Every structure is written in structure tokens, then in C-alpha cells.
Image 1 (cartoon, rainbow, N blue to C red):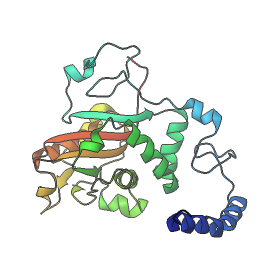
Image 2: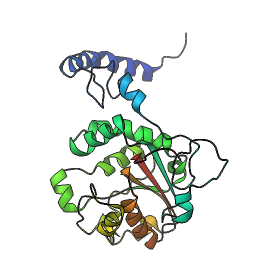
Image 3: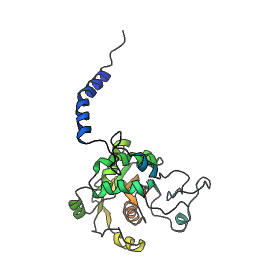
Image 4: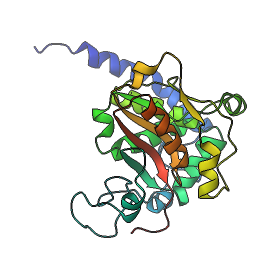
Amino acid sequence: MGAIDFGRLRESGRTLVLQPFRILADLVYPPACSACGVLTAGHRGLCAKCWSGVRFIERPYCEVLGLPFSHDLGAGILCAEAIANPPPFDRLRSAAIHDEAVRDLVHGLKYRDRVDLAPMMAGWMLRAADGTVEICDAIIPVPLHRSRLLSRKFNQAAELARHIASLSGKPLLPATLLRVKRTEQQVGLGARAREDNVRGAFALARGHENDVFGKRVVLVDDVYTTGATVAAATRALRKAGAADISVLTFARALSEPI
């Protein structure tokens, strides 16, 4: 007679106990597409139409800015922007292009308090991280100013970072980087105005210097547009002695592949 797997028995018992509650929950809150809301077969997923509209960022892409190329130009190729205007961070990786269903997911999390979307989005980001999370020492979210955090009630970048840290087992440092300057909303501002808006906006929290000195860190945000925000945050981390800084976002704005 084989050994009894008590762990499996407990799990089976838990499933049987919870099954009626899950059925009831599905009746009250039917599974729906996370982007458009149409009914689906399961929770935390997309319908076929929205899924087909997601443009995931896959190789080949620029090794620094993560910009997708229309065809493979060879290993280690950089885009013209990365060569002409190198960013202060070491590399950028994003899960998907900021359009269609992806924009709906970002807006749902950011403006409609859909924190239930964060685990799925974080999973996509971890897949797109290209090994940067695996080798990093810590994960740091782009912070909100305390006044905006008070009005919004949560920081969408911190929610994504929290789930990435949970999935990867890497340390999360939500209080290391501070937004010390109350900035205007970046939406609607041009590239130069965005840079001016966030200049000097970030600083390391007092006593947290050892969190980043000589470390490899991953800086997490929801969307990369012109890069002004993550560039300003990167400069604060670099000033504190961070050895390697990767930026990881859920989405990035892009017109067309280059």
C-alpha cells in the first residue's frame, strides 16, 4: 500500500469546501474580460477580440530602449534614439504596446481602481523582463507624491511592483525612492515640458542609501511614454550609487516598429 499524500488530501478537501463559494461568486460576479467587460469563461483574462488586439513586445528589439524592430538586424543592435540620446538607465523592457486593450487595462488599474488587474499585468511584465528581475537585487516602484497618493489612495506602479516581487521572490523596496516634488500630470505635456515637470522630483529616503548602493535594481512603472519620469527617477538612484538600473513597464507608447 502506497504512502498517503496528506498534502494532496488537504488540498482536495480545501477545493471541495471552496467550490460552492466559487460557484456563488461566479453567479454574482460572472467572469468577464478584464479589458472590455464582455463575459468570458474565466476570471482575470481577456476575450478573444481583446487578446488579438494586444501587441506584445518580442525580440528583435533595441537592447537598450526595447524598441521593436520590424525585422532582425542581428544581436546587440541599438536603435538610432539609443545611440543619439542614451538614456540614464541601462535598459528598458515593456510587456506590450500602449494601444487598444492594453490602454484599457492601464486605465482600469490607474483610474478605475481595478487593483484586481495587477496580478495579470505583473505576470506579463515578468515574462517581458528579459532576465533583469531574475538577476536584480531589489525592485523599486516609481513613487507618487504623498498628496497625490492621498487623493488616489494607491500607487499603480507600487501595485505592479508588489506582484512582480511576489512572483519572483525578489525584495520589494516601496519606501526607498521618494517623489519630493509635487508635479503636474504628464498627460498632455510635450517631451520638453515633461522633462521640466519632473526635474528634481525624486530623491532617496534618508537612511536608505544602502538599499541601492552598488546594487542592481529594477525600476517599475505602468507606462513608458517619453521616458522623462523614469529618467528623473533613475538619476536619483544613480546619484545614490545604484550600479545597474533596468526599467520595467507594463506598456510603452509607440507609433510603429522601426
